[in-house]
Length: 165
Image 1 (cartoon, rainbow, N blue to C red):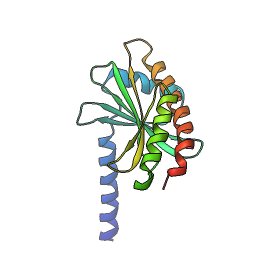
Image 2: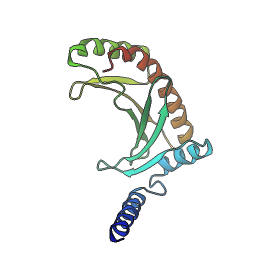
Image 3: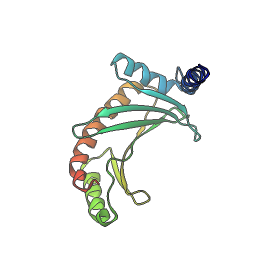
Protein backbone atom coordinates (compact mmCIF):
# COMPACT_ATOMS: atom_id res chain seq x y z
CA UNK A 1 0.00 0.00 0.00
CA UNK A 2 2.85 2.35 0.86
CA UNK A 3 4.48 1.72 -2.54
CA UNK A 4 1.28 2.55 -4.39
CA UNK A 5 0.85 5.74 -2.37
CA UNK A 6 4.49 6.73 -3.01
CA UNK A 7 4.13 6.04 -6.76
CA UNK A 8 0.89 8.01 -6.91
CA UNK A 9 2.45 10.91 -5.04
CA UNK A 10 5.53 10.84 -7.30
CA UNK A 11 3.32 10.85 -10.41
CA UNK A 12 1.28 13.79 -9.11
CA UNK A 13 4.45 15.69 -8.22
CA UNK A 14 5.99 15.15 -11.66
CA UNK A 15 2.77 16.32 -13.32
CA UNK A 16 2.64 19.44 -11.15
CA UNK A 17 6.29 20.23 -11.96
CA UNK A 18 5.49 20.03 -15.68
CA UNK A 19 2.47 22.28 -15.24
CA UNK A 20 4.49 24.88 -13.36
CA UNK A 21 7.22 24.92 -16.02
CA UNK A 22 4.69 25.76 -18.76
CA UNK A 23 3.75 29.43 -18.96
CA UNK A 24 0.01 30.01 -19.19
CA UNK A 25 0.25 33.21 -21.19
CA UNK A 26 3.09 34.68 -23.15
CA UNK A 27 5.16 37.41 -21.57
CA UNK A 28 5.91 39.18 -24.85
CA UNK A 29 2.97 40.79 -26.63
CA UNK A 30 4.33 39.63 -30.00
CA UNK A 31 4.30 36.03 -28.85
CA UNK A 32 0.80 36.39 -27.41
CA UNK A 33 -0.57 37.83 -30.66
CA UNK A 34 0.73 34.82 -32.56
CA UNK A 35 -0.62 32.39 -29.94
CA UNK A 36 -4.06 34.02 -30.11
CA UNK A 37 -3.97 33.56 -33.89
CA UNK A 38 -2.97 29.90 -33.51
CA UNK A 39 -5.85 29.44 -31.06
CA UNK A 40 -8.26 30.86 -33.65
CA UNK A 41 -6.92 28.39 -36.21
CA UNK A 42 -7.10 25.49 -33.71
CA UNK A 43 -3.37 24.84 -34.04
CA UNK A 44 -1.83 23.01 -31.09
CA UNK A 45 1.37 24.59 -29.72
CA UNK A 46 3.56 24.51 -26.66
CA UNK A 47 4.63 27.75 -24.99
CA UNK A 48 8.03 26.85 -23.54
CA UNK A 49 8.68 30.18 -21.85
CA UNK A 50 11.74 32.39 -21.93
CA UNK A 51 15.08 30.71 -22.54
CA UNK A 52 18.50 31.67 -21.15
CA UNK A 53 19.13 34.02 -24.08
CA UNK A 54 15.93 35.99 -23.41
CA UNK A 55 13.89 34.55 -26.29
CA UNK A 56 10.32 33.47 -25.65
CA UNK A 57 10.01 30.03 -27.24
CA UNK A 58 6.97 28.43 -28.87
CA UNK A 59 6.92 24.95 -30.42
CA UNK A 60 4.51 23.79 -33.13
CA UNK A 61 4.68 20.16 -34.25
CA UNK A 62 3.85 19.38 -37.85
CA UNK A 63 3.43 16.20 -39.86
CA UNK A 64 4.87 16.97 -43.27
CA UNK A 65 4.49 15.00 -46.45
CA UNK A 66 7.26 12.57 -45.49
CA UNK A 67 8.22 13.19 -41.85
CA UNK A 68 7.16 14.80 -38.59
CA UNK A 69 9.07 17.77 -37.18
CA UNK A 70 8.88 20.66 -34.74
CA UNK A 71 9.00 24.31 -35.70
CA UNK A 72 10.47 26.37 -32.88
CA UNK A 73 9.79 30.11 -32.77
CA UNK A 74 12.21 32.33 -30.86
CA UNK A 75 10.55 35.68 -30.15
CA UNK A 76 13.04 38.46 -29.40
CA UNK A 77 12.56 40.64 -26.34
CA UNK A 78 12.97 43.69 -28.59
CA UNK A 79 9.57 42.78 -30.10
CA UNK A 80 10.71 43.09 -33.73
CA UNK A 81 12.39 39.75 -34.56
CA UNK A 82 11.55 36.07 -34.52
CA UNK A 83 13.68 33.12 -35.55
CA UNK A 84 12.05 29.93 -36.81
CA UNK A 85 14.14 26.77 -36.54
CA UNK A 86 13.62 23.18 -37.63
CA UNK A 87 16.42 20.99 -36.36
CA UNK A 88 17.31 17.49 -37.51
CA UNK A 89 15.69 17.66 -40.92
CA UNK A 90 17.96 14.72 -41.70
CA UNK A 91 20.91 13.01 -40.09
CA UNK A 92 23.66 12.13 -42.58
CA UNK A 93 26.88 10.13 -42.52
CA UNK A 94 30.30 11.79 -42.63
CA UNK A 95 30.92 10.32 -46.08
CA UNK A 96 27.88 12.19 -47.47
CA UNK A 97 28.81 15.64 -46.12
CA UNK A 98 29.89 17.10 -49.48
CA UNK A 99 26.75 15.80 -51.21
CA UNK A 100 24.49 17.11 -48.45
CA UNK A 101 26.26 20.48 -48.57
CA UNK A 102 25.65 20.68 -52.34
CA UNK A 103 21.95 19.95 -51.82
CA UNK A 104 21.77 22.61 -49.06
CA UNK A 105 23.47 25.14 -51.33
CA UNK A 106 21.05 24.32 -54.13
CA UNK A 107 18.05 24.68 -51.81
CA UNK A 108 19.43 27.97 -50.46
CA UNK A 109 19.66 29.39 -53.98
CA UNK A 110 16.18 28.09 -54.82
CA UNK A 111 14.35 29.50 -51.76
CA UNK A 112 14.69 33.12 -50.76
CA UNK A 113 13.36 33.03 -47.22
CA UNK A 114 14.74 29.87 -45.68
CA UNK A 115 18.26 28.68 -45.07
CA UNK A 116 19.46 25.06 -44.93
CA UNK A 117 22.66 24.33 -43.00
CA UNK A 118 24.64 21.09 -42.91
CA UNK A 119 25.90 21.05 -39.33
CA UNK A 120 29.20 19.19 -39.07
CA UNK A 121 29.07 19.04 -35.27
CA UNK A 122 26.26 16.47 -35.25
CA UNK A 123 25.81 15.59 -38.95
CA UNK A 124 22.30 16.99 -39.18
CA UNK A 125 20.62 19.55 -41.39
CA UNK A 126 18.80 22.54 -39.93
CA UNK A 127 16.31 24.77 -41.71
CA UNK A 128 15.85 28.31 -40.45
CA UNK A 129 13.97 31.50 -41.25
CA UNK A 130 14.36 34.89 -39.59
CA UNK A 131 11.59 37.46 -39.47
CA UNK A 132 11.83 41.22 -38.99
CA UNK A 133 8.64 43.18 -38.39
CA UNK A 134 7.07 46.16 -36.68
CA UNK A 135 3.89 46.30 -34.59
CA UNK A 136 1.46 45.71 -37.47
CA UNK A 137 0.14 42.31 -38.56
CA UNK A 138 2.45 40.30 -36.30
CA UNK A 139 0.21 37.23 -36.20
CA UNK A 140 -0.37 37.20 -39.96
CA UNK A 141 3.34 37.63 -40.67
CA UNK A 142 4.16 34.64 -38.47
CA UNK A 143 1.35 32.56 -39.96
CA UNK A 144 2.50 33.30 -43.50
CA UNK A 145 6.08 32.45 -42.54
CA UNK A 146 4.88 29.19 -41.02
CA UNK A 147 3.04 28.21 -44.20
CA UNK A 148 6.07 29.17 -46.28
CA UNK A 149 8.59 27.23 -44.20
CA UNK A 150 6.32 24.16 -44.20
CA UNK A 151 6.28 24.20 -48.01
CA UNK A 152 10.03 24.75 -48.15
CA UNK A 153 10.85 22.02 -45.64
CA UNK A 154 8.68 19.49 -47.49
CA UNK A 155 10.49 20.23 -50.76
CA UNK A 156 13.86 20.35 -49.05
CA UNK A 157 13.29 17.05 -47.29
CA UNK A 158 12.49 15.40 -50.60
CA UNK A 159 15.88 16.48 -51.97
CA UNK A 160 17.79 15.64 -48.77
CA UNK A 161 16.08 12.40 -47.76
CA UNK A 162 18.29 10.18 -49.91
CA UNK A 163 21.14 11.00 -47.51
CA UNK A 164 19.11 10.42 -44.34
CA UNK A 165 20.56 7.66 -42.13
